[in-house]
Length: 232
Ligand SMILES: C[S@@+](CC[C@H](N)C(=O)[O-])C[C@H]1O[C@@H](n2cnc3c(N)ncnc32)[C@H](O)[C@@H]1O
Image 1: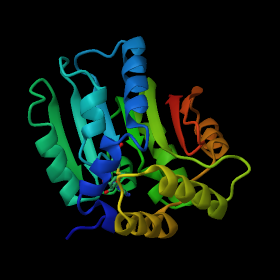
Image 2: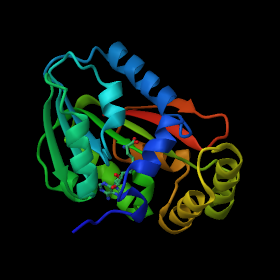
Image 3: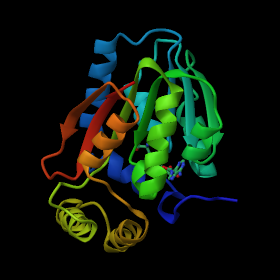
């Protein structure tokens, strides 16, 4: 049975948002490419993509020419199906797609990997669940391995209602290709199913669980999204 949020049962609306670059995927992909090149990603590297969706982001961000062990995890069967289609031409990649809850997956796996990424997904979990994800993923990274996190994130002065209002005001003003009906669905999703954190909360968890380096790679001009890098 399909277990994911209503909004992601079909990727059509989210794909339109990505296509229009409303959530800054182009910038986030460009930064990931740059960081991977600086880190010298090589054949045999493993990436665990938590909440992979249709895998568009990873397909664009990670090099096609290397032998990448790609493991996409998503709660939604539809996402897994879309990711399989998306990655069918990544012939050098060893692709495994798993329909599972990210925390359940991390806590029940033993392998240690070089890269873990999570994009626009962690905010769907409660605060204790997110904290548990940080603890679990530190254990799944090799020494020197990297966790890339890009997601919505509150400013220090925000609380959840203020952040939601800032977010929705901007979307209504700037997301021109989204119909009123679609915006109503997005609004309902944000109000009911989003649990954003502050950047300082993520940094505190990372310190508490022993990550050695924490970098902020990007903040969009409206202070809605953040891209953080954590090194184990
Ligand atoms: C907004 S999409 C993000 C897709 C992609 N990562 C990106 O960067 O655009 C969020 C995805 O997270 C998945 N998701 C939500 N909660 C999850 C959980 N607890 N475990 C695994 N996947 C989850 C949803 O099914 C959806 O496919």
